[in-house]
Length: 248
Image (tube, rainbow, N blue to C red; front, side, top):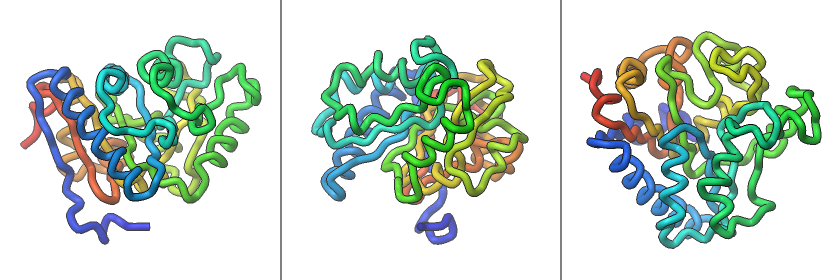
């Protein structure tokens, strides 16, 4: 695995847009390019999806134009999801199906949904986390890992000063005390995020500006989880102007 020190250039690429619409359209075009390149190189592309307005907006945009993506050769995972019933409106996976996955010919066997609280593991969140860790395994490398971000810098369900954010071994953990409701979640951790080829942040809003600046100026991961996520080949920040307003 490539370490940050081995990368030719570990500096992030930062793109600033006048609107979320422009942000999403650029991310759509680059997502198509990244997935097509991965399929040309390795046959299969693996992606980790995120929720949030920009993450779901990107998925909606792909319905209109997904270029040359062979959807039957895309492995779909999620960075995190709420441990609530499958039909709960806050499930990232449900939103992704509504926005994109029900409209493109993805192979159902390649869609890897995190277990809901009314799934095969019932309310055993730790069993659900272990099962998703089994699916991710030690070999899965995401070609693109999409990330949203909260105002306090959380990514996936990795919040400041929590055990999940400090995790350096397990690839998937259960979160039972999320400061943002609902409290129960499953999340990928830094060991799997940081072996992704490309890590993309899709961020807009003035309330995110402090966290964006912290990530760009070497903040500690424990304080600002967003500062700890990097791709082995590229780290790209897609920002609107308000989210970028505190950058030096």
